[in-house]
Image: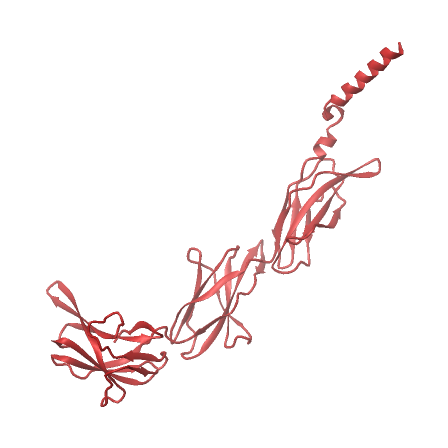
Amino acid sequence: MKKKLLIIVTAAALTFALLPQAAFGASSVFFSDRPVIKAETTGQRTIKVSWTKVKEAKGYELYRALPGKAFQKIKTVKSASSLTYTDKDRKSNTSYYYRLKAYKVTKGKKVYGRYSWSVRGDAGLPQEVNGPWLEASGEKGIGFYWSYDGKADGCYIYRSESEDGDFSLIDNVTEKEESYWNYADDGVKGGETYFYKVQPYADCKGTLVKGRMSKALSASAIYDQPVAAKSSLINGKASNELIFKVTMETFSYDTVFAVSTDLTVEKEQRQVTLQQSWKNGDAEELRETFLHISGLSKDGITYTEDGSVTASGGETIYIKASCSDPVSVGTGETSRIIIHCLYDGNAAMLDNL
């Protein structure tokens, strides 16, 4: 009789173990649900963390970590109805990671639910600015561009006249072209060097949040390529040889003109190009004639027929150009002269003459 009773009790215990937990109350099942957590930027040094409610939770424990570091508990939320926490006094323009777990009290002891998945939150705008890079410079303007991978509603532009000086806010850019932002500073003086920095910003629910300053860009208010201020043709008659008088721009770089000893060599760009537009009724024709530089002079009297001559800003140089066939200048309705030279070891040209 005792043996039979033991079998019955064992069977009952097995039946109890196999019954689903829901049959004895659903609290443990629902409490094990993983909370969903999110973090959003609310200020230069603040991050708002929020999460979904866990049924039967008594409260929540919130953890924080820097990238690559261990999580540390930062807050115990003792109210089950409190589902947000504002993490204050964070390091500006820095990313943090958060995770959270719920707890309840059973027989005087805390029982924890599962951790949420971790999420990233940003204090300020942690992304770095790419650039800026110089796009163009002139006597009265400097243009540059940059990119930014983070969220930005605009970028502040700062300028200084020295790299270690005080950078002053000069403008605000709110639109970008495709993936790049750009800016043109028209308030510069020719011959001066300027330094620029860019700072992105974003409107986070009514709070203005600024990002990190970019590295400084140095740019000079002078032309990227040599430019001639004025020129004139001394010998305009049909001839195998013409002489041009060219005065360099004051704010141009030093320009190297070189004599071409081989008239068949065009790749060195030691030549003068005459472009003349001709019209006959509605027809229009553009004629080009190449003249190689055969002599150079600083005074218009003594010419060097070998080597090169350097002309600085404001200086005048006389260029003797030759061609195998006679040529005249100024007989077309419009004429354009392009004088090629050597500039920083590369081919360049003096345009707009």
